[in-house]
Length: 245
Image 1 (cartoon, rainbow, N blue to C red):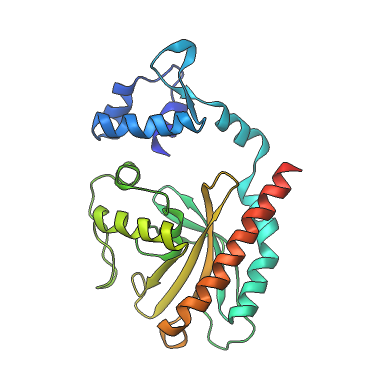
Image 2 (cartoon, one colour; image 1 turned 90 degrees about the horizontal axis):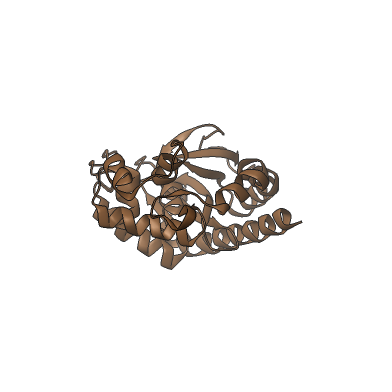
């Protein structure tokens, strides 16, 4: 994200050395990240040069896609259905810099005590189920670009506090298909979220459920994961269908 922002803010093609200076990480890591973005069409080298400009995928997204609007439109009823099926509050989130931004939510009608959370609220990426689901594809290099070398804020004794821990968690999430927050951000809550992916497999959002620990025992994790992952997969397919139409 920061590489794209640096290139977008420049009126001229940006050299690898400029990106390295701007991001403050080693040249080889910047090259690998830029090469990945170029391979996916988000960066390009104009006229055979080694400098970078924004690629065709950026223009395609900016002209055709309005993710937040499309996500809310497609997801609203699915959030409601998931809330009723699980009996818990559901949320939809996207990544904004180093935070997860909640853009929609639904509270279950089956519970007297519900987890609050409104559209427009932010939550940290490193210690929430939604945040970690949004980072599922990230390895240590990508996480370094997003967060730098800083230590993470510790909210509870369970909070992830290092990039190495977060990279390990992301690899597991990418393998399992869902993320857990077992009291990492708020000690009284447990949350489970799954990444929503586009047809190319890229993570574009996350959706999940939140509940008081007493009502969300570990015995529920497997069934809740199946429900949330199925809903996230359905939303990804619906988004692709809508955006292709």
